Length: 476
Ligand SMILES: Cc1cc2nc3c(=O)[nH]c(=O)nc-3n(C[C@H](O)[C@H](O)[C@H](O)COP(=O)(O)OP(=O)(O)OC[C@H]3O[C@@H](n4cnc5c(N)ncnc54)[C@H](O)[C@@H]3O)c2cc1C
Image 1 (cartoon, rainbow, N blue to C red):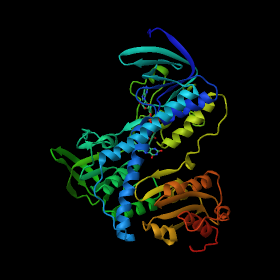
Image 2: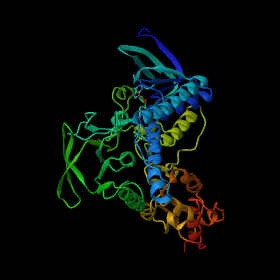
Image 3: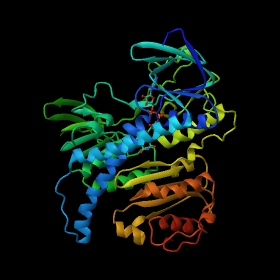
């Protein structure tokens, strides 16, 4: 294609991850011409290096844990012979590639033109799409441009991943096997999930978090119950601890930690997994050419959150490129994609209600939350009543025997439900009812009218709602 050639379409989306492809699909469904530029594979981080492959492996980990539970609690004479890593990863990769083909098929069917290449802004309405060494063609977007270039693993200065001893979540996914021991640095969702996975597969695991609890952004009871569950499984959880130095050697990594008490502790592990967050990807994106800049943390902040539109009219942002209150989650990026596509089509969609977007950690035990933590609710001046119930206070919770809890934060006297926080088995599925409760501003007294099936784990949510409504049955 000649460099001076210019093509036109309605919408250009840069980045084909969950944020970008959802924007493209919805915009095309609304009759807009859409070009989606992706330099790697559509589906992005979530499909190829994040949500999908990690949850596939965590499912296998649950099966492994189930063998121990079957033997130890239920008299099932089962033993684990071994885990065939190549068979496990083959199943995982098959799930990813079928999903990938599905997304590609949806895009083709919707009439989205997918262009393989790297895109850079050249002005407020123009983009150059480079393919390989070619500078490529310039495209003009009549309606708008959507930035959806996502994120990559954040690293720490002086702790550069080498892909073998010091690894990121990307490297850990494609490693030829799991190590016998691992030090996971970072107690956010990704760190906790990888710690849990490694432990299920038999590794010695140390999980280090600088804050005073795991999942520091979640309700403090979530961190407490999660820590208890992980410790019970033999994971060495160290909160309030910092990595002072890490030296790779032939057989592993020697790390020096400063503990919460200020003492120095040396620790050896075969692998150090750095999971200290994700950094937005904007290199080579040409922000300046369009009159844009990143904020101090590298995000592209919208000037108008209700339209996810930057200070340059017609340039929108979705997904991991957005700063908080966006959440760095695939399902948040789907909602953002829908919003931006509908905005570009001239509709007036409702803004994303980030407070009602659930946040899940797929470890064992799992955690799932939606809405405000108890501390946040108090800080915002609500007259708060919080009720917590252990899952083992229900029959189904006893059957599972994995501990866990339901905590509901509400306004006093059975009023508005402000937040729901769950820890335990299957809570990633259980949170769905609570996201409606929080999203619809429902009151605990109303929710308590609705009967949950017995025996289920979800009836613990119903029991807590009854307690908040002053009608507690098994929970005072
Ligand atoms: C290990 C892990 C587990 C996770 N688990 C979950 C989970 O269970 N649930 C959940 O909701 N979220 C999860 N996430 C987060 C989720 O993956 C991200 O929130 C989501 O992928 C963000 O989507 P995005 O479209 O913003 O960016 P990405 O998915 O990162 O996509 C951006 C795309 O843009 C392309 N690109 C970048 N620059 C250019 C350019 N200049 N030109 C052309 N193309 C470009 C990239 O190649 C990439 O494909 C997980 C993440 C990780 C790492």
